[in-house]
Length: 504
Ligand code: IMP
Image (cartoon, rainbow, N blue to C red):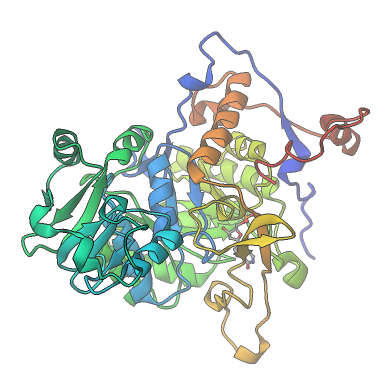
């Protein structure tokens, strides 16, 4: 006889938080959102923590090297998508690890044979006015000069003038030697009144630029997440098929943390993958596993050695798994049960295994709810896909800017490994859709606003940290009627747009 759970499968929208006593100390600036990412023993510090409880989803439309750097600057971690060749994924990890804070790889490059027309065209496309002139036109070629808007006068020069005729040649450039620190680079910039400083190695090859304007932006990111060598912390997704080749390549590229990316993680495949990683690397390589939605799934992956466990089946915004296969669980019920299992496991073994609520965040307050319900951190796809830094195309549709966002189980991503149980390729079916999401601008501003809301909620609940939130949060189920009461009602709204624009 089948088991039928007594409680229905509930989602975030069905809960609210009841405020707790807030002391005068309970102000957003006093709240710490620091949270563990990997398991640790009672009394010890986790080997990896984040400064904010946000990770970006293992998806083509969300997490590449650009997103990895942008999110690490805010204090979170991106998991670079695994539905690409091992070489290109490792190259993305390497690129993000090389992007030293304040040292920017040159994204606008030409050769001395290019023309003024090429300069203007590149400036228009990239939006940057500093162009590196290298021998082969690459970002790390031999630096022969630079062109900025001070080097040409459009009214006096023809479009086919060669760059070599008007660039500032290397001999006249002030440059920094590869290996200098950011503060040394900034001193050179200030002493010489420069806008940018090219950094070159012993062979005169360009390695990066340091820009004057980034001096301040560096100070804007006090929570940035760096490794022991002051490089950004970077994550990556792996699968249970090619892990024997993919994991070594990612480790070699410098990845800090990986996660097995699967729509359903309570499986022998995950056990085999985790065992191989532990046998090969011991505890030095960190890897999460999932996804699961109940205590059985959590305990299984915990015993297999997962560093963290990811929760969520069928709740993603682009996900049609529940419709296609009839499996899954409301995200709130899943998080609540797994959090209880995590706490019991901690009591029993003295090992705390962080849990991640993955998918289904629609409003910012859902993040607060997931944390209150016991999640240590959250993974989001749709939320990050909307930002400037996501890898997908920005388009104008019906007069509004949108970004493309597609599921890993859609035909577009063709990430069948995430869903594969073997069998005939002809019989594969989609578990995700291809969609648009409203463009929302830069990640930095959005994340700041979202987290300010989360901190305000925590203050109302009288807590100043995530562990306190886990302990003290008081939640209530809402009735269908009280949901109506929660929105604006019985008034004539002057403006419909705007109110929900932050996370809708
Ligand atoms: P979102 O934040 O609601 O957009 O959900 C993102 C999450 O959905 C990801 O982290 C994955 O766990 C999951 N996901 C990604 N692609 C698919 C898909 O094609 N089908 C089902 N779930 C998906």
